[in-house]
Amino acid sequence: MISERKFTYAAAIWFISLLLFAEGCSNTFTVTPTTSLMDALKNRGAVPLSSQNPYLAANMLVSKEIERSPEFKGFVRHQGAPKAIEVVKQLLKPTILRLYYPASRQYFQMEQRGETWIISGPFEIPDSGMKLLDRIIEKTPSPPALLADLSKSKSRQRASNAERPEKLRSHFPPVTPSTLQVARLAKKPLTQVGKPSAEERKIALIKSLQTKSVETAEQTPKGDIVHYVTYNGETLIMISRWYTHDWRNVGKLARINKLKHPNLLEIGDMIIIPSYLVKSTVRLTKEAVDKLKTVH
Image (cartoon, rainbow, N blue to C red; front, side, top):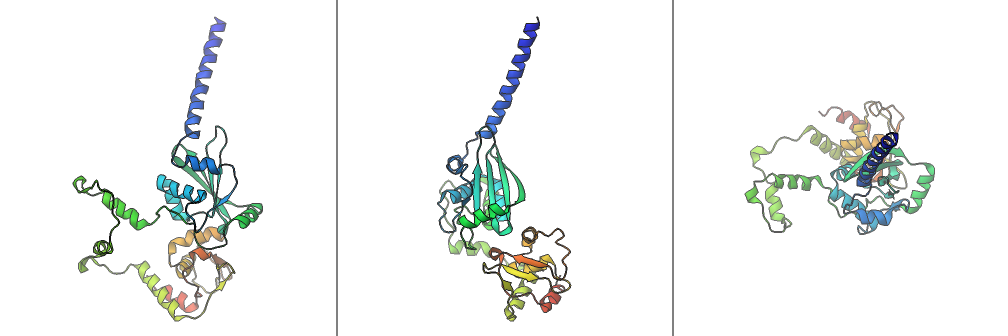
């Protein structure tokens, strides 16, 4: 009787272990369109992306994941394409993909769970890692060359196409719209053209002020802007608008400059604006600060 109980108990433990093993395998051995590229790059350390050749393995992996995974595409659209990636694969463990951003000394880690990426970070790149990346990545502000399309306008166009009635869908291969078609899509009746938004007015004012100024901001040899907070009323959003023409880069600037309280800048604070975000090298002046504070 006791031996039968032991056998039943052992069988139950074996069955549970088998289920856990099967679940682990389902997460570990998921086959996706990028599996072969993952295998080619696995456990090779950091691999740089090229700014000129989108057909290199690392570039292709990023491009294909952008096309395959909504999480990956959204992340790269928000954070930008990495300068280098690293694939880590171990037996019975999920695939790990690390994306390196040396300009901000940060990397993000993605863990593959089935067909989904679980993203964590940012983490600081240690000094030894920075030295390695400095040796292998391209010394250019140009972003990596990717075959995937990250433009929001085309995403919106695809979304609007998906909302059309079924009878309007065509079974013919998609044709690139001509210039005439694009112009027609962009045209609106005059009654639908609204007033510029507050953000558009601010950017228009910034560009106008920049064309009238001859003062240039301090730059590093790599083309990064070095801005010093000099006047009362300067904010990180204002600095982001002035140098990058986009307030939404404020989050990147806060991370790059390791600002614990980005809304509380003090006179003398130094803000680095990486070259890949820079749209203007004109220095932010007191006149500009005073005028921008009045635009709502």
